[in-house]
Image 1 (cartoon, helix red, strand yellow):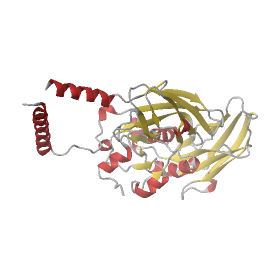
Image 2 (cartoon, one colour; image 1 turned 90 degrees about the horizontal axis):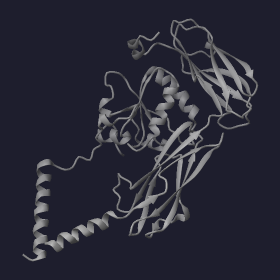
Image 3 (spheres, rainbow over the protein chains, first blue to last red; image 1 turned 90 degrees about the vertical axis):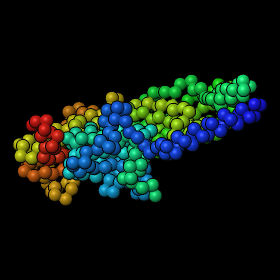
Image 4 (tube, rainbow over the protein chains, first blue to last red; image 1 turned 180 degrees about the vertical axis):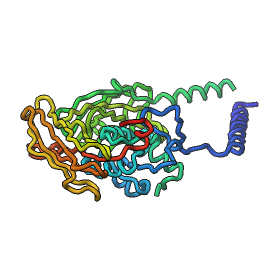
Length: 149
Length: 238
């Protein structure tokens, strides 16, 4: 067989194998998957968030994102220089005292703002359990808790 | 067949070759006291044998601005450049890490070729310790103290302290506050006393300094009368 024929044979076999895998296993899973073994201190996977008690969700993303598609009844607390941190604190304290289980989320897995906000909440010493959500808003979207639009 | 495999191998090497080498991928800086921003630079070189294009950077925070020196995005083999990162520390405190993703052409959307990290130490000009004074419901309404300490080398005076009711159920007179000077311009105590601890309540402690303006004109703490949380009850905390 000439080289072109050989190349076509290899390509045909490869595509057939790929197509068969797709047919049997289905499309690749693109949703965010959180591995509890990879959690850093203070982090939590969405599937681990307690369901037996109310949770106070805190959105650490930019205000326009929170207004567009933040979790319902979440409050905003970000580190945007244009925002008033003392106002965030003053709003959050009574809410945290009412609901002392707090999960902070930002945009995605690579965003560290949720950790910084979570650290500030712990420094308030309100006796609350505070976590940063691994995967952030992406994890919430992929689970159906929030919508992109 | 050997010619085809050889060609494929050569192409795969070529495809993996694009790269930017950073002199340092991690830097640590300390902000000046009461600075509003911190600037730093990361130098890099295209150490590969093919041109590289920077297509995107993502600092992950509105508080970080990233600029490529001269706006130059394309780098020929051997060419060098600089990435400048400016961190607005207005709302930051303590030590923060700011990772910055740098995407090159052909990088997948979810994985940048390079992540550079900037660790910033932000000194606290005026520190309240503790941030929150707590009385459990039913405990004795004894005075508690917030220490107000100024950063080393700074002389900032406390001119007064008030407590404002926070939340609908707290009356404005539920807490009282007095200020004591331990060392003028350096160290103060704010003593807070609840009127009673029969019911939960929250007061926002506002400590006024003699600074003309800025985020440290008023420092904020909290006075809280609350019930133990479920976790505290389980842990048997008093």
